[in-house]
Length: 141
Image (cartoon, rainbow, N blue to C red; front, side):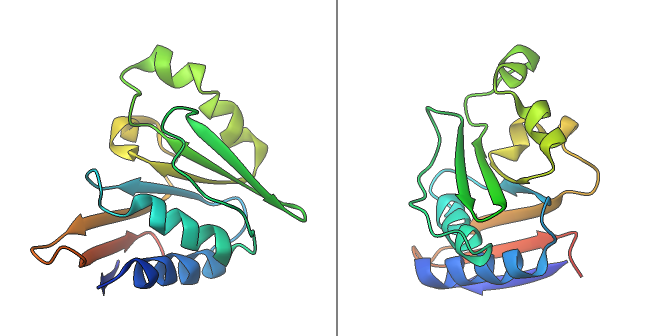
């Protein structure tokens, strides 16, 4: 497990950028954290670290956004509104897992029971300082 303390949006993006550079293509990253913790900022950095230059936004209503560059695809899920199996199946989540592309999932606590055993877990926590975050990354050496 690695633990990082960030003091700005840019520092959070940088942690994600470095993680994306280390991971093999096709990795699944499960993100955990309360509302406003910085999950979408993390995804922006992760996308850049994969070499994908794309406008990243939270897919809260779309449920999944797709970002592409060259032969790489990143699927960005938001599972905030998922409350049961029917909701999860309607996202096509299991089909996306089978594609072999990289996935990054916000609100993974809502689907934790079905996450792949080898997924990377990212836990982002707020601190008393409004701009500070603690980022724990589990599953990467």
